[in-house]
Image (tube, rainbow over all chains, first blue to last red; front, top):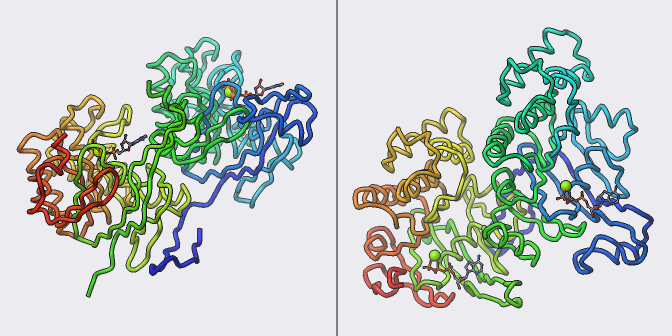
Length: 294
Length: 251
Ligand SMILES: Nc1ncnc2c1ncn2[C@@H]1O[C@H](COP(=O)(O)OP(=O)(O)OP(=O)(O)O)[C@@H](O)[C@H]1O
Ligand SMILES: Nc1ncnc2c1ncn2[C@@H]1O[C@H](COP(=O)(O)OP(=O)(O)OP(=O)(O)O)[C@@H](O)[C@H]1O
Ligand SMILES: [Mg+2]
Ligand SMILES: [Mg+2]
């Protein structure tokens, strides 16, 4: 960012800050018909994301943020606040009602919401990956671990069987899945192991953006800890731009440096993660932090 | 000629609005002004609750001040105002220029001491290899034995954690070092080591703002003492004329 104002008597330094990899502007998703009145009838002040005017659900509204390569952005908020909606709009699973999302690629900036469905699919294959809370969403249960990982590789044009197997075993090794389980059906895996396979699959084509939706929710504490450690070290190793959705502040604290707090479909606060934890401003953030600290 | 300051804190204010307690406002400190040059060590003194820790955290921007400016020199002759930077800029400046050592190790689950300190060195711009070497040296300096380097830091003793913290904050001399009771859990031998380390950093040009709960540390290390009372800067003293009652040991 450039800073050309000169305050007081000090010459102001120009700082080199990594540029965004993903930039989201005024993203919104409404279930049901809406106009300004409907939007105004929802949100934190009203205390609901469901409109009393016509019953429409404003699942997410006016959500804007940037994420740089090598940075993980947190998205926290209680159940129903709109976190998954934001992620699914970016993943292409849900169509946004409005807003823009731009992705920086080697071929220039791409307006994600303007892409046709085949270009969208391509993007999901080689640039933007998602790790879902439920492994059944990211994996095919009746296919082997190796077969699941081969899928994005073949979609990206890999043809050589040996090379695909090598890449799959490399990824499974990295995500600490025993190689001798490579040919077992994913359905036979434990929850933590499924999640590791899902992460291995997400990384198959070295994506520049990875979206994590509650990646450890529902796992036993010790298993969740192992998966979290894996995600943390992967984020440190690769210069991925990541978004981590969680209602659990300890996950957010461990993985992210910046964070958005959502309530009733709106972003109510946005700050560095340590600021949110130690000096939360919004009443809702204060409640969330107090609950997490209790 | 007066040297250009490394840190210039101007009209800094910080209060908290506690929404859970009928929006009560707690003033941490108000209208704080001071400057600090390279190689200078200023200690903050005052009773418990005077606002010392809040002031350090506001400079580091873990707390977001209500108003005021915190000018930090980042390279020769050029400054940034920590209060007007974006979050990403604050994150970048912190890693690079400021060492913050608190009384407690910031809970980093399932990480070993060497990894924690090496990570801090990498943020200062070192390569992986250099960072590990610098981390090993930093841990030796604070007397953390090799057998503890890959043990999860969360299981270390209070004094060991404090020393890991100190190693992380000083692994590469920062421009500005913020110390919040960094010696409170140390035995005499380790305390001595830490005092020597801090003194040597000041000697090498690091600017230090510190909080110590004992007079002896202040008198050995600090060149000036700022006295806070109920969030106000009420006096500036030389360390020798400091009164026992003004250190937080009085609580
Ligand atoms: N297909 C749909 N039709 C109608 N409403 C929906 C639909 N999908 C989601 N919603 C609503 O949108 C709101 C936001 O849901 P979302 O799943 O984004 O919340 P979340 O923050 O991820 O919650 P959780 O922590 O429980 O996963 C909720 O009120 C939800 O009921
Ligand atoms: N995160 C916070 N939220 C709310 N109030 C806070 C917060 N941090 C500090 N305060 C309040 O600000 C005031 C100053 O506290 P601070 O911790 O800065 O004092 P201190 O001088 O460091 O005291 P001590 O010597 O006991 O550590 C106190 O009234 C304290 O309760
Ligand atoms: Mg969700
Ligand atoms: Mg304190």
